[in-house]
Image (cartoon, rainbow, N blue to C red):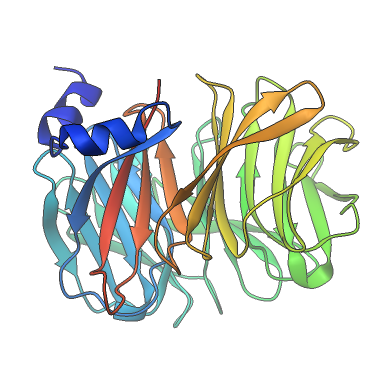
Length: 328
């Protein structure tokens, strides 16, 4: 059975009335997976598609939630972390990397049983984690301005890439030759050439607080979302020129490209997911899908064709993972 079919089998069947209300919507809320007793802020998500496990960096709870997507429930919770922010599964080494802001460490867990197998001391504010598949290494943003390069075989730091300030969202291009990095405190978008070991900057287009970022490889675009003012910007990944600019939701923390449908999903703390489709002049909003205030972290998994949104606990809503199915 395919991954998509397994996930569908685990999801709740919604009533005909709800189905009628969501008919024609580009994102349909399929199910809610409770996270249990999780308090405070939830940061980024990671996924092991082979085992159908979603990893939840529960920053305010100092824990990592492990969600079984087949069963639709929390498999286990790993405690004793220190403000976990970034998490990623590394297929080549069958391991999970968890970056901790509190103590600057990166904890490494074995993929099958999630036993601890390593710890890398990076420095202050270890944050986003990305996997460089082409060169088989892991990149972690941290400190006052660096990307730490980790060898997943030895689980040691091999090198640093120096930046002008702390990196937020960053992405590696498909060729593995460039890294695009949001550096909001320096009011820059930096581009690291991994072959020449050089760094250059792209124009910010007059906006600030650039946090989420995605790469649209097919269109040769880097998508950057600014919080001030709330703007989705598309830059040409080859020369940095402005391709498109459109207003989006406030307090954005994640952005993803749905290559199959030529859509863009922006998840925002104001309690919505903005869905954009490609238009002749750039992008047009297709829908503003409601979530919960503070639910700004998300993950789109093309292999499962699902968007997962992390919802922190509120007085009228428990902490959970909301699973959205793109349609059609």
